[in-house]
Image (cartoon, rainbow, N blue to C red; front, side, top):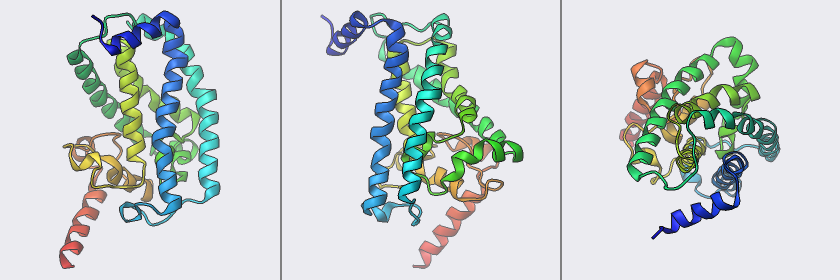
Length: 265
């Protein structure tokens, strides 16, 4: 007897082609997860809710938030969607499939762990390259227009950067040829991770308080508020790449100073 999940999946593959699911379906899921998870931080900032957990006291202007949303929609429709449409044959060639049965949970978990590790490694080096003088000035400075990030700024970037760092996200799935279900789950988790890292809030329930080596919002917020030549904290998800290559020294010094100041009071 099919599980509820398999029944739902059977409905999808019966009523839609694999091309439709892998392109338009992926795009719609991405947009839904991204905006639903990213919009709350705008509300928190505007309303002052959870202000004691806000990492920076500075707020973005309404015009700045509006600009971000409008450009994101433009980038997603004009860059992300075409890339998904064009890349489908490549993924199909690399082994992407949508048929039943769904992969075993151990396969899904192992692949997603591999994707996170590989993405973090590739992103770290790509991000460091973007912080070289010319590339920062002409490409990466767009993402750093928001020194006080909020969830939606996670994907606010120059179109060239979207393609450049987007490679880090798709290389894992391209190498393993996953089931479409696994690809969707990976995309959802990656979106939630980057939105949280850019949220501008560090809550008691933030993942970095519970997951070893996870960077999170406090780790990445430092990267946005420091001069680009000294920012460090280049990794997307974990902290060990910056620790190994010494690009988190500024952040560590700040944390040590905050700890000393905290003990004084």
